[in-house]
Image (cartoon, rainbow, N blue to C red; front, side, top):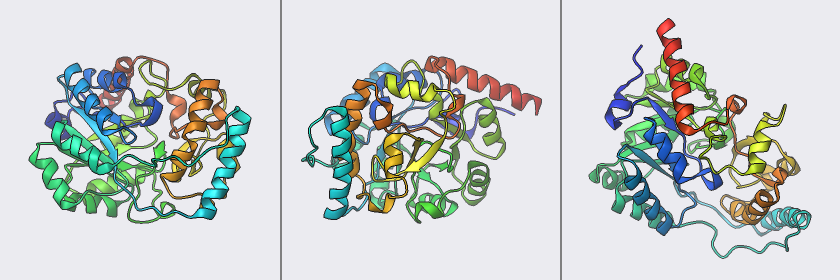
Length: 355
C-alpha cells in the first residue's frame, strides 16, 4: 500500500503525516520546522499568539523551510461572565497561588487575543496551510482564505461536524477521536455527545465526505498510522508522540510527568481553560473533577490560571500544570523530531507491506 496519498501529494509532503498543533509552551518554532523538514506537515498552535508574534512566526517558518507548514487558530467562541463561577474559580486559583508562593490572582486586563487581528495576519502572510478548531469559519472568510491560495483544514469530532465543514468549503477535515490529547474541537453538540473513538469515527467520516480525512487521537506510532490509513484516512496527525521530542518546548516538570511509571492515565477536564481537554490526571485537575459546571466559560479560566501554570513550570511542580496528552502518550519517546517521523513512517510502511 503506498504511503503517499492525494493529500500528501497536494501539499508536497514526503509522508501523509501531520505534527498536530500544540499551543502554549510546546508550540516552538523548532518543533514545527523540523517536522516539515522531515517530510511531514509541521504545525504551530498559534491561538495564544499576539498578531505581531504570529506574523514573525509565519515569516520565520517561511525563511526556515521551503516545505509546507500549518498555522492553527481557535475559532472564536461566545462566552459570558458569571460572577459567582468566576469567584469560585478564583478561590481555587488563590489557593494554588499560596501553595506556589504567589500573590492572590487578579483578573487579567486581556482575556484572549483578537481572532480578527490574528486572521488578518494569516490572510496577509498567506501560509501554505491554515487549520482551525472549535467551530467553522464564515463563508466570507473561507472565500478570503482560498483567494490567497491557502489550504484549509477543519476539525470535527462527529460525522455531522465533518459534513458541515465540507459544506462550508474546507479542503480537508481532521477526525478527532475521543482519545486525542488537548482541547476537544466539538461545535455542534455537547462534548458528552461527541466522544467517538478514532476506530469508529474515521471510517464513518470517510464514507460521509469527499474531502481528505485526517485521523487524530490515540495514534503515537506506525501501528496506529497503518491502521488509520487502512480505515481510509488520507493522513494521520500525531501530537503526544512529539511531546518528548528534543525540539518541543515541554517543561522539565511536564516531561517528568509524562515519563513517570504508571502515570499515563488521562481525563477530560475543564479545570485549566474552561473548555474540555484531555490531559494527565494531576492535583489541580482532581480538585475540580466533578465540578465542571461551576467552572467559568473558556477563555476566562485559561487567562486566570496562566500565572499558576507558568510559576509551576519554573518551580518544577507538575501538579499545577495542564499536562495535555492523549491516551497513547505512553508510546512517546524522547527523540529528535526527524527521528520520530522516520521511525513512525518506517514502521507503518513495514506493516502495510506485510498486509
